[in-house]
Length: 486
Image (cartoon, rainbow, N blue to C red; front, side, top):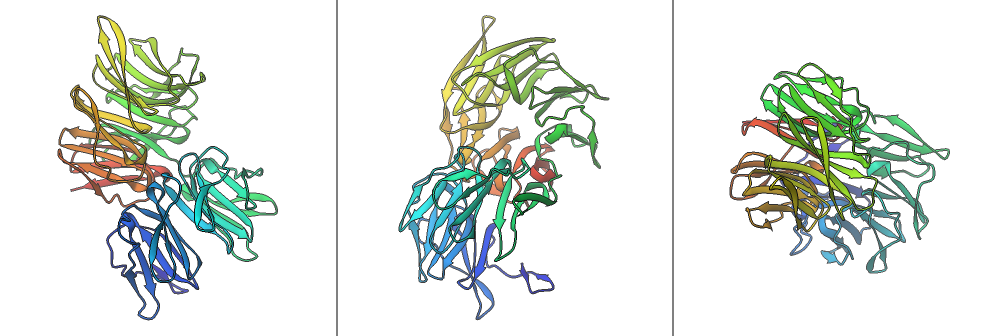
C-alpha cells in the first residue's frame, strides 16, 4: 500500500510471498519478505521489481534498512544478513544462527537484533560480531535516535539502550509487558515504539507515555468439543467461549495469565496458568482449585484421559527442576524432571502413555507395574507443544520451526518449513494436523508432508482447534481469533 498524502492506495508488488518490512529514503524504497524475497521500487516507472539477494538465500527476511545508497541491509531467519552495495546483493557472515528481526543504525554503526535471549550483532567494518547484551527477551527492532545513540525494543516490554558500546536495560522502563515490535523517531521528534495489542509508546522528558492501545490480550490456548462449543484462554484470566455464533467472555475469577486449556467434556474444562493458577468449569461457572505442590510456580500445560484424571506441567522455584503434576480423583502427586529449566506442554494417548515436552526434552510417562516411569529423549531445540494420534504416532514442535515425530521407537526430525517458533501442534487424525507459531505461521499436514499456508495475520499464534478440517479456529496475540472455513 502507498500513501499519497491523502489516501492509502494498493500497489502491485509482483509477488505472492508475505512481505514483512519496507524501508524508503534517498537510497530508494525496498521491501523484504518470505523465502528471501527482496523487492525494489522503481521511481521512473512507479512499479515494484524483484531484486534477488543472490543464490542460496531462501530464508525469510524480516527487516530492511539503508545506511546509504551503497549500503542497504536486510536480515532474517537463522542469522541471515544480506547487503546491497549499489549494484548487487551479497550474503554476509552474521556470526549467529538466531533469527534476526530488526536492523538499523546510523552513518557509523549498524546493528541487527533477534532471538536467543535478545541477540545483538554489531557490524565492525566488514565483520559482524555479538556485542554485550543483557540476557532476556527476543528483540524485534533497533533504531538510532541520534548519532552514536541506539535503542532496541523487544518482547516483554524490553527497551535497551547503547552509546555504541555495551547495551543496558533502559532504567526508566517501558511500563508494559507486551511485546514491542518497532521503534522510530524523526529529527527533533519524540521516540515512538509500537507493539502488540495496539501498544503505542512515546518517550519524551525522560519518561514513557502510553499513547494508545496496550489493552488487547493474548490468547494462549484453545480446546473444544464441537463447532458450537470451543474455549480460548489467555492473559489476565481471560476465558472466551464460542457458542456457534459469538465468542463470549466468562468470569474465571483469575487475574493471572492462563496458558493452557483442556476438557473431558462440555461440563468439565480445566485451565491453568501463571501464579499457580488452576480453574475448572462445571458447565455453569469456573471454580479455583488449590495446588499442593509448593515448588510449582507457572503452570504451562494441562491434559487428561478422562474427567477423573489430569496431568499438569509446571515450572518450579527449584533450579533446573520442572514438575509433571498428576491429579487423580482429587489426589495430587508429582514427578520431578531434572535437569530441566522448562516443561511446556503435556498430551497423552491414554492414561498409561503420557508425553511431556520442554527444554530440548521429551519425556514419556508410562505405567510400569503401578509405578510411573519417565523415559527421556534429547531433542534439538526447546519444544513448545506435543500432540498425537496414539502411542505409535506423536508430534512435537518448537523453536526455529523444528518438528519432531515419534514412531513408537524413536523421535526423528522432519524437513523444516519455517524459521519461526512453533507454539502449538494439534490435529484430527494422522492425515489431518496443524501447527501454528510466531509471525502468524501456519503449517498444514496431509499425512505425507507439512506445507505452509497463509493465516492472514502476522500476530503470533498460540492455539488452534476445529471440529472438522473444513472449519478451523486459531488464536494468538492482540486478541487474534481467526477462522478458516472451506
